[in-house]
Length: 216
Image (tube, rainbow, N blue to C red; front, side, top):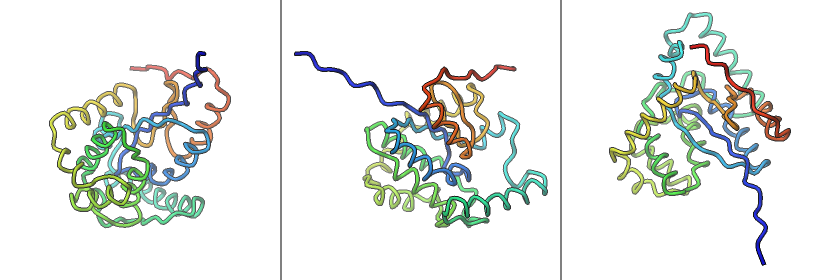
């Protein structure tokens, strides 16, 4: 007797960086969506500063003062709306998240559930004021997230992980990603944590994806 194959879970690619403020702001809300809609998530960590450079964006301190001021206002609004801890001027921002990204990639290559680690890494920067570039800190975050921090750290300098991290960023640039977070469903991009409701609607409606025009 043949078995009936269940429909595959909807798959969302989550393009983010541990350095990304808005990835953190939307992190718990996205994880709630993943649970409620039983989604598969493809985690794609990117070099956010390289993404900015390719897409015309600027690091925070290089933006006009009025834009910096409004960003701080928005941070306070979203902190209240989402009821999350959020430090306006984190002690270790910006810190290089590249090592933490490679640890994440190593864990995903092993098939580990990395959802808790992803949120812990974001929270480390934006609420706990920890140094996401510090190896013992990364190992501790991994351990607390149910992973083997020391073992993952030991493999994080594998050349293939450097190459994969670089390729993910280049591929994101080629797909017109210009910031973080991006949530990509059936090829349709949703930029920003304030687009999660739109993402959910696209999943529920199961409509044809909208195509991003190529203006290059």
